[in-house]
Length: 181
Ligand code: GTP
Image 1 (cartoon, protein in one colour):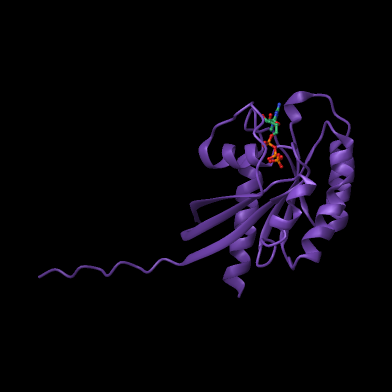
Image 2 (cartoon, rainbow, N blue to C red; image 1 turned 120 degrees about the vertical axis):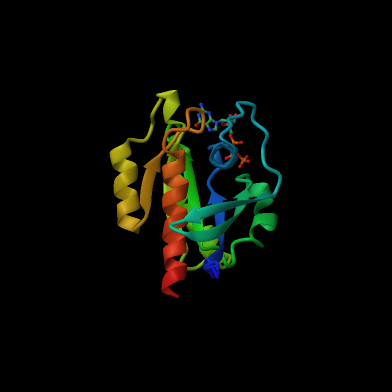
């Protein structure tokens, strides 16, 4: 006689991650690189909000990551302001080659709070490091992130550098928060 071991019930979480940052800094490309390992050099601006889902195993836990990719242009505020509530994590992206996009990151935090995002875990991302025309140093961005209690990671969606680290560390941090609740 043999006994079959009942399969262990795996834990499952559904988490909501959003992308914030000025138009053109590379939010959609970062998500595409992470989800599909692809890079598209043609600029196709997001209209309103895009949605995608990626299942990930985080230390034996099934995590379904709902990704909401926000359009950065001001004209889409009325659409994206509906999606801030219940967000648990965010990538806050600027382009290291464009100082104005770095100076605007505070504006994005204020917008998220105004429209109902609270206690989000935020990863600040300095993107497009492959272009080598820096206007923001790693040290300056890192200091800003530390002062806010955010993680700072530099990335290139073109080469893939830093992209998995940025997303996986954010997803793990949000999943850990679920475990503690
Ligand atoms: P909105 O949808 O308007 O908010 O823009 P976005 O932030 O989603 O930017 P998107 O991902 O569409 O990228 C804008 C442009 O930058 C595209 O032409 C991309 O190919 C380019 N791009 C994005 N990431 C990188 C990168 O890491 N390196 C380089 N060289 N180009 C990038």
